[in-house]
Image 1 (cartoon, one colour):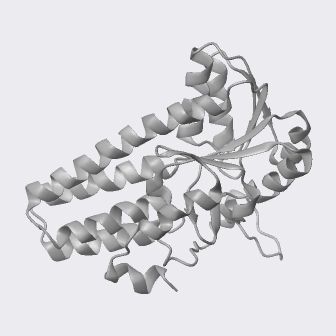
Image 2: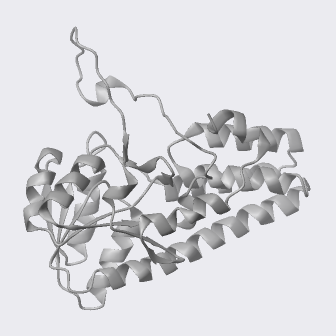
Length: 280
């Protein structure tokens, strides 16, 4: 029900508490590795663990590590506020926005745009199996935004009415955009209808270029059907949209083409302890 931003906050808060309790450097290092592996499809969780591992080489003193975690959270929140402002600018002149899943940054961008007097309609997908899109639709509606909720299968059809397809990102790597399952076919529908496809994210949600692929095991099948039959159930939360399908990537550092944004991947170093787990 919660996205990468929320889970990254939770991870940093947990590590800060661990450090404050006097955990050894081995324990904190192990915790960082476990966090990176817990949600491999969420790049900001990886980014936090990666940066923490580098920091632990400089200092393992509890107060210093807790301060690092608090500073990471502050910078994450500040970057999100800046990115939202960038996103609001992209909504100018837009009559209908289609979104998928429930990105907190997309939510905040649409609410801020509405509060500035912009009038537009938002189409939210239910976003099965978690149905987090229902909660997003309720939130936007309470803000006075004209909101329509549709089943996931209707998303492509609704692109006929859209001016902008706007989603968040669980992560971006040289291998593609990782986001809620269904993003890729929606991106294809947007391309077919000539609808602008914008990704709203943070520079911390880019994997280092050394990361060639990320995978996460399927979830429990009973999220889809309560009674199992003789068929196999594949319940995957994320897909990978080819990078060339997007038109712009919005981060706290600017509004870029995907090709320009991928330079962020090249800038990032990966800690040696993570290389064997993520670089294959």
